[in-house]
Image (cartoon, rainbow, N blue to C red; front, top):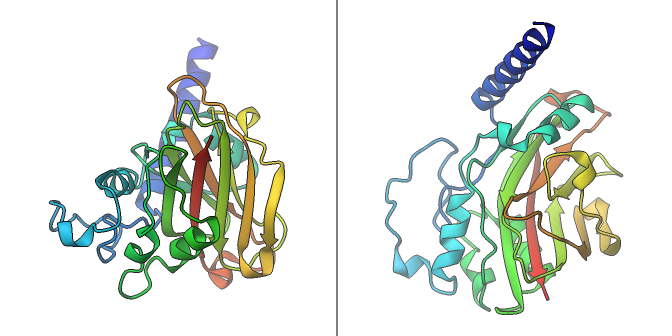
Length: 252
């Protein structure tokens, strides 16, 4: 009886937290790229692809980005969500669907330079990372988004089975130390963190970090990029959200 009550209490607490976070989601994924950004939660007024918009990007690239654009589904993180709650984070947003690693061609950067600069950080991350074509490289793209102080966002994605190397390029606002981080996990607890041992670039005052390491998928389960922001210097209201974009490259 005690075990049943304990489980019921845990489920109730988690459910109430998830509902609260879903109502106050701070993620800002675009619903379509490279079209102009649509505010989070708004339907795509024209879900059919426009060939004139997709020059330089494979159809898989656009489809992959749209697949990961829906906000919610925090429960999919399982124990990882509890891990971040335990570290003092108050909420987060997660992609409901899983991104596939995609091929990019040499024109990809130009096609993401949409009017109004909605994806300037993604463009910069792609320029730093460079674009190498298939079959040797595949990419997961996280377009310009925002995370509030004391919260975390996450993106689920599939890891290619035949590409054991991963390079992560991060572009964000300036930060210091570990107050803003993007970590990759291949499972649903903190012990599955992918160790990116080799630091290629680290210019925190410019918001630029690039690291690489080895990654091994856990069966067919998706991995997760968890982006956390914890600036202890100011209140949430004074600090404001952190803007960011990530390029995750898998290569042989």
